[in-house]
Amino acid sequence: MRALPKRPASHVIGTLAESLVERAITARGWIYRRLEKDKDYGIDGEVEVFSERGHATGILFKVQVKGSRKKVRALKLKQSTENYLSISPLPVFLFVVEVESGTIRFLLAERNRANHGAISLDESEELDESGFALLEEIAGEHCQACLTMGDYTLHNASAQLIRCLDLMLNFGGDVEAMVKWLRFFASDEVLTLSYGYAVFLRNEIKRDEGLLERIREWVIEFFPECQEEIDQAIAAFDRGEVMGRRLEVAHL
Image 1 (cartoon, rainbow, N blue to C red):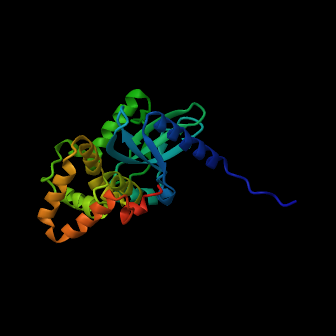
Image 2 (spheres, one colour):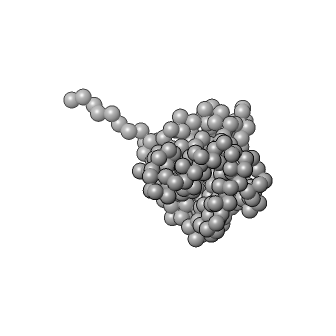
Image 3 (cartoon, one colour):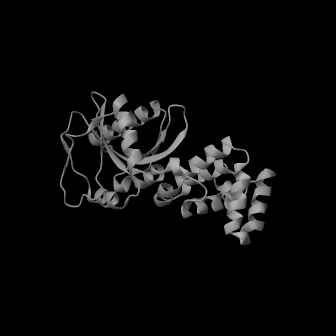
């Protein structure tokens, strides 16, 4: 009888470790997304932070999960992971899971780790109540999209102007669709620069019914040649027509 392939114990531990991290993140009210496309770089998932009331904060970070049966003192990263860390615009955290006890510890990965050897876990933090607060604080400090969320206005950054143009031209003012499109289709670079502001816009538009029209007028001041296309996109949205980038996220 031909022998059947066996699944290595390390794979079982790795799967269990990621499941424990995902469960802890989800229980916090945050979102954990598995990233199969980034597995080759050693990145297992992406986390989006939400407030206690369930509001998006715009804070995003990437995760690498390492599992072991017992406590480990240091980690050695693959070269592909170190290369990814050097170019990633989003912060990356290492989560180390002791699968027998369920203990989860985390550490912010340094961006430039070329030839630095193994990573000591002596300064890692346990993912408990205070650990979650610290994790959010560190991620917020390192996520450029969140650094100035409280300072956003319509007139203080070209990136915001482009985001408002995108909102009107490609989404007809449908800010929910724009936020969803950014989450599923935008590159890490665009997410870092734009996601926090998109979330901010969504919250402000819900609060201020006249804001969307003021955004339209402001965008047309800078891009008068786009007025006809913008008004057509807005009219299509008002009629309930699904087109353009809104069509790309309609079934997500």
